[in-house]
Image (cartoon, rainbow, N blue to C red):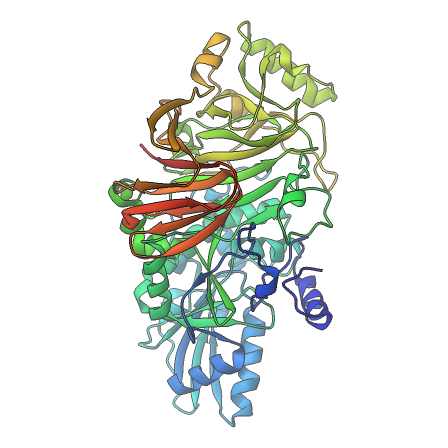
Length: 605
């Protein structure tokens, strides 16, 4: 049982509700069980305290607030259980002897067939896992004129417009915005309890995810940004029968606080075909009743959320709120270039006692822009956080690579189920702790079994062109998609032979030294727009941001304390990802452990 649940009754109540979602992962608790969190250990529910009486729990308190307003707009993300929200609020409002008029935005959606026609150009081929970023607006999915023309009913005590895009109504009324974490949205999707925006049919998860990524999330994020300054209340809708909420003014104060001190998102974890055992063995409070963990979304901000805490109550909001409000504080001198888009990603690939990743590559910049509508491409590096003795990384081609023979071998394998002796074509390199392998776009690569890889990368994260996947099935017994055509449109066959060792395996260089510290440069490739340093130290070091955002992790040691110029203090444990925004200006890192600490720092060039 997850130790964040204080008793069996609470656990089983939650368990019954979780039938609405399909996941091995625990639902974040409404209220933090502080005894389950040990300072100095990896925390799966990192929360920023924002003071007392800032986050309120339950529909009863929210109902009281709504009654005071009389007329409200309840907007929010797709995947919210709008029928449940309405039913709970209606019962509580009517219990007060009040009459409520509901206007539901779902009633103003265009017919499903018309919406499907509108979004189809952005979904690519039916059997493809990729589409291209949608260029529509959210109002295009609705009979906008009719929705905007709705008026309150003066014969009712309370008037509420409810549902996704409710703010399209032309009312000068407070807006409650109900957010939902992307992981919970996907668990509901897999549990067949939600559909895509404007659709009334459950589809295969990969088709729904594609629609979410390329259409729904694009439209909803644009809409959220458009109404940002009008939101009065922010609510967290991830619990099926409960809710936590706060005033937008307090939420903005919380964002301002972390945008000049430290930022840590809530990580989430996923099993996979090649997954390993490191995460299960080293991270407290994850569900151990799973076959493996393949990924930890440490800082993949299109899908991670920020958690705030008041009086023990937790409220999670999507990371894009921070970028909409505070992009200049977060990115400093790089804000003009990247805007709302946070450009660096940290995640774990766990193959410890697991299997090899697929042989793969990622798109060139022009290709990802023209084919998929992204602005930056998936340039990656593999930092080896931990590994077994015989661990290795596949990277770059053999000197004698013949692209035509290689392609024929891959296609024969796919068609006839024949194993490929992959090292006839691709180099295998021994991996050891703290190695950094460089994977600019177009580079053939794979993490071999026996690694815990910290993937330090550009933010795009789904554009992986698999060429060979060891003839295995996914965890549901289905073949994993192979993308030979896309791969061969992007592979750089000049990254072969000795050039791989010279250009794609980083050679550390000491830049500066002090009494008990070293600043080490782990150079990235010329194609990478970010660079990597590591700070090795015994006691403490001081660092200036120089108007640059630093994405960091303790990669050796027990725990550290970060003190920023505004007086904020935060303790981070081994393997926890955190961000020091540009506006922090300077910070001190103190080693709280008995052995030397090593901290990786990724930053924009």
